[in-house]
Amino acid sequence: MQKRLVTRYATQSAEAADENQRRVEAVFEELSSTKPETVSYLVLRLEDDSFLHVSFHDHRDDEVNPIASTAAFAHFQEGHADRRAGAVDQQKATLVGAYITTID
Image 1 (cartoon, rainbow, N blue to C red):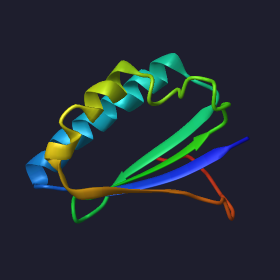
Image 2: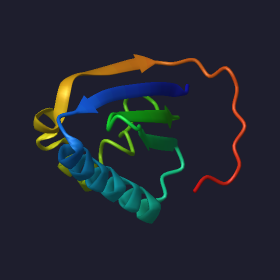
Image 3: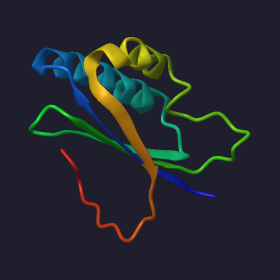
Image 4: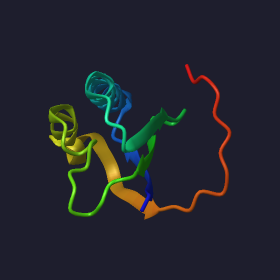
């Protein structure tokens, strides 16, 4: 069972976006350290300082989410509403296709 989620939200300001980015980068550092095999995760900061998260989860509903269970993600969530402008738009997604090379 694979879950695919796309999450998008705007930030209050460029400074809030910078803080948000630092916290997201910490999540990636922790994931790089723990190397969970049941998740793929991509976050983009858009030109307007909004963020787009794309995650692929391959864990059962009764198993721990390898992203949300990290200490860095808990820190990312702290004050998230204060950094955001408006609500979070999160939707399940269907994979139509993928072509992936090295991403820098």
